[in-house]
Figure 1 (cartoon, rainbow, N blue to C red):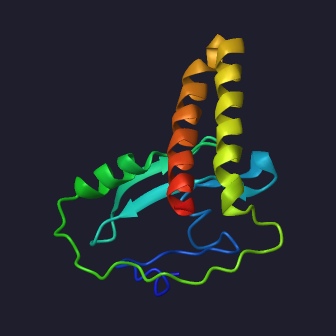
Figure 2: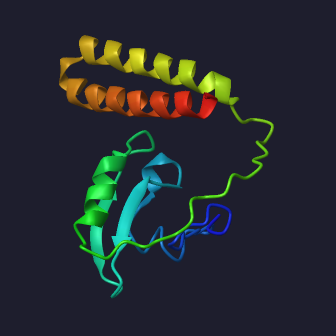
Length: 144
Protein backbone atom coordinates (compact mmCIF):
# COMPACT_ATOMS: atom_id res chain seq x y z
CA UNK A 1 0.00 0.00 0.00
CA UNK A 2 2.88 2.38 0.79
CA UNK A 3 4.40 1.98 -2.67
CA UNK A 4 1.00 1.85 -4.43
CA UNK A 5 0.01 5.22 -2.92
CA UNK A 6 3.57 6.62 -2.87
CA UNK A 7 3.20 7.40 0.83
CA UNK A 8 5.99 9.21 2.65
CA UNK A 9 5.37 7.23 5.84
CA UNK A 10 5.01 3.58 6.83
CA UNK A 11 1.71 1.81 7.44
CA UNK A 12 1.26 -0.97 9.95
CA UNK A 13 -0.62 -4.21 9.37
CA UNK A 14 -1.16 -6.49 12.35
CA UNK A 15 -3.10 -9.51 11.10
CA UNK A 16 -2.79 -11.53 14.32
CA UNK A 17 -3.24 -8.50 16.64
CA UNK A 18 -0.02 -9.27 18.51
CA UNK A 19 2.35 -6.49 17.47
CA UNK A 20 0.23 -3.33 17.72
CA UNK A 21 -3.50 -3.94 18.17
CA UNK A 22 -3.24 -5.61 21.58
CA UNK A 23 -0.11 -3.76 22.78
CA UNK A 24 -1.69 -0.38 21.92
CA UNK A 25 -4.86 -1.40 23.73
CA UNK A 26 -7.30 -1.24 20.84
CA UNK A 27 -8.54 -4.85 20.95
CA UNK A 28 -12.28 -5.08 21.68
CA UNK A 29 -13.23 -8.45 23.22
CA UNK A 30 -16.79 -7.29 23.91
CA UNK A 31 -17.56 -7.20 20.18
CA UNK A 32 -16.44 -10.73 19.37
CA UNK A 33 -12.74 -9.95 19.10
CA UNK A 34 -12.10 -7.09 16.74
CA UNK A 35 -9.79 -4.09 16.73
CA UNK A 36 -11.44 -0.77 17.48
CA UNK A 37 -10.78 1.90 14.87
CA UNK A 38 -7.85 3.90 16.20
CA UNK A 39 -5.26 6.50 15.31
CA UNK A 40 -1.98 6.43 17.18
CA UNK A 41 0.65 8.90 16.05
CA UNK A 42 4.18 7.95 16.97
CA UNK A 43 6.78 10.69 16.73
CA UNK A 44 10.24 10.41 15.16
CA UNK A 45 11.72 9.47 18.55
CA UNK A 46 9.30 6.57 18.96
CA UNK A 47 7.13 8.29 21.57
CA UNK A 48 3.34 8.28 21.34
CA UNK A 49 2.26 11.82 20.47
CA UNK A 50 -1.45 11.35 19.87
CA UNK A 51 -4.05 8.68 20.60
CA UNK A 52 -7.66 8.35 19.59
CA UNK A 53 -9.52 5.06 20.08
CA UNK A 54 -13.10 4.51 18.97
CA UNK A 55 -15.78 3.36 21.36
CA UNK A 56 -16.98 0.85 18.76
CA UNK A 57 -16.65 -0.03 15.06
CA UNK A 58 -18.95 2.82 13.91
CA UNK A 59 -16.98 5.56 15.65
CA UNK A 60 -14.46 7.50 13.51
CA UNK A 61 -12.26 10.52 14.06
CA UNK A 62 -12.61 13.47 11.70
CA UNK A 63 -9.77 13.66 9.21
CA UNK A 64 -9.16 17.32 10.10
CA UNK A 65 -8.49 16.29 13.72
CA UNK A 66 -5.80 13.85 12.59
CA UNK A 67 -4.22 16.48 10.34
CA UNK A 68 -4.24 18.97 13.24
CA UNK A 69 -2.57 16.43 15.54
CA UNK A 70 0.18 15.79 12.98
CA UNK A 71 0.63 19.53 12.36
CA UNK A 72 0.95 20.10 16.13
CA UNK A 73 4.14 18.01 16.08
CA UNK A 74 5.83 20.87 14.24
CA UNK A 75 7.79 18.56 11.95
CA UNK A 76 9.08 19.83 8.63
CA UNK A 77 6.88 18.85 5.68
CA UNK A 78 7.91 15.95 3.49
CA UNK A 79 7.98 16.54 -0.24
CA UNK A 80 6.72 13.69 -2.35
CA UNK A 81 5.08 13.06 -5.67
CA UNK A 82 1.30 12.75 -5.66
CA UNK A 83 -0.04 9.21 -5.39
CA UNK A 84 -0.09 7.32 -8.66
CA UNK A 85 -3.47 6.14 -9.87
CA UNK A 86 -3.73 2.39 -9.55
CA UNK A 87 -6.07 -0.14 -11.01
CA UNK A 88 -8.12 -1.27 -8.04
CA UNK A 89 -9.87 -4.58 -8.34
CA UNK A 90 -12.75 -4.83 -5.90
CA UNK A 91 -13.76 -8.16 -4.45
CA UNK A 92 -17.10 -9.83 -5.05
CA UNK A 93 -18.74 -8.14 -2.04
CA UNK A 94 -17.45 -4.61 -2.70
CA UNK A 95 -20.06 -1.89 -3.04
CA UNK A 96 -19.84 -0.14 -6.42
CA UNK A 97 -18.73 3.50 -6.27
CA UNK A 98 -22.08 4.63 -7.75
CA UNK A 99 -23.86 3.11 -4.71
CA UNK A 100 -21.73 4.81 -2.05
CA UNK A 101 -23.35 8.23 -2.10
CA UNK A 102 -26.94 6.92 -1.68
CA UNK A 103 -25.73 4.46 0.97
CA UNK A 104 -24.15 7.26 3.03
CA UNK A 105 -27.23 9.45 2.50
CA UNK A 106 -29.42 6.66 3.92
CA UNK A 107 -27.10 6.18 6.90
CA UNK A 108 -27.20 9.95 7.48
CA UNK A 109 -31.01 10.07 7.55
CA UNK A 110 -31.16 7.06 9.88
CA UNK A 111 -28.83 8.88 12.29
CA UNK A 112 -30.94 12.05 12.09
CA UNK A 113 -34.03 9.99 12.96
CA UNK A 114 -32.30 8.29 15.89
CA UNK A 115 -31.18 11.64 17.26
CA UNK A 116 -34.74 12.95 17.01
CA UNK A 117 -36.26 9.88 18.67
CA UNK A 118 -33.68 9.56 21.42
CA UNK A 119 -32.45 12.94 22.71
CA UNK A 120 -29.88 11.21 24.94
CA UNK A 121 -27.95 10.09 21.83
CA UNK A 122 -28.38 13.29 19.80
CA UNK A 123 -24.72 14.33 20.16
CA UNK A 124 -23.58 10.92 18.86
CA UNK A 125 -26.15 11.06 16.06
CA UNK A 126 -24.99 14.55 15.07
CA UNK A 127 -21.36 13.36 14.96
CA UNK A 128 -22.39 10.41 12.77
CA UNK A 129 -24.36 12.74 10.47
CA UNK A 130 -21.24 14.90 10.03
CA UNK A 131 -19.20 11.77 9.28
CA UNK A 132 -21.70 10.62 6.65
CA UNK A 133 -21.62 14.11 5.10
CA UNK A 134 -17.82 13.86 4.77
CA UNK A 135 -18.08 10.36 3.30
CA UNK A 136 -20.80 11.45 0.85
CA UNK A 137 -18.61 14.28 -0.37
CA UNK A 138 -15.69 11.87 -0.83
CA UNK A 139 -17.94 9.44 -2.72
CA UNK A 140 -19.18 12.30 -4.92
CA UNK A 141 -15.56 13.19 -5.70
CA UNK A 142 -14.82 9.57 -6.66
CA UNK A 143 -17.67 9.53 -9.15
CA UNK A 144 -16.43 12.62 -11.02
